[in-house]
Length: 282
Image (cartoon, rainbow, N blue to C red; front, side):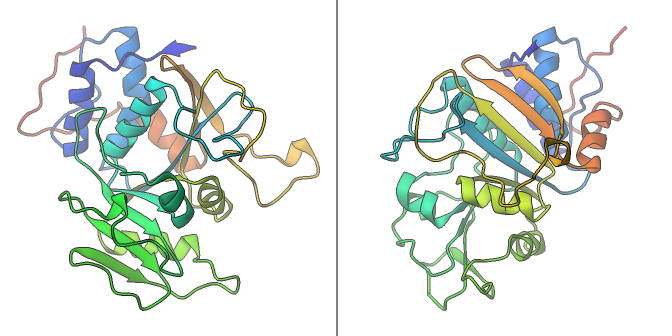
């Protein structure tokens, strides 16, 4: 198992790659820094097409919260840093309204350098109050996807879509609407139902599962497949890399052939331009 070491210099290189004026193919990196590049550089590349990532932070027994709903300390400190790094690399982070109401997340980048992504809340019936933390004006785009004709405060964008027969919104329509507004790299952060619905729709290219060493014993699961398989031979077995990220263990899963190609080729070409700083390898 590789131990990732996200030093300041390797994270700056990853941010340079995201901005389009850095490369991943050159540099004198330690083994830990190289592991960090393997995790984040494929997601930072903007020249390799759109990408949709899901992130789950869970316990050893697959729980994301207690039965009372306490989810604050499921991920260890390094697992939380990993989540914030993912936020810094994407155009938008998506959550369902239940997560927004219960966890009151800010969905900002606070634990690492980087820009806050657009915040997208899936709220079919318009239940999210206008003073929710995710809708606070801090310069990042704020988007609510809903079916109802509910007005939102100035600066909050509303994407109105038709509902499914069960009152939910189709993940494929949501993702298409985000792409249409220029948000091509998307992180589906929660909750478990939202992540599962995007997975079942075949829209996820990557799945990151960060497992913390604790046993909760009850409470909601991080991932629930809506389609059950009768035989293990029929279960999806994604291409997976495992990394020690400190307090948590990261399972980095490529769910599609395009994702596998991205991970296989992320270091094969440089993105040149102002600000690139590289050291040639011997």
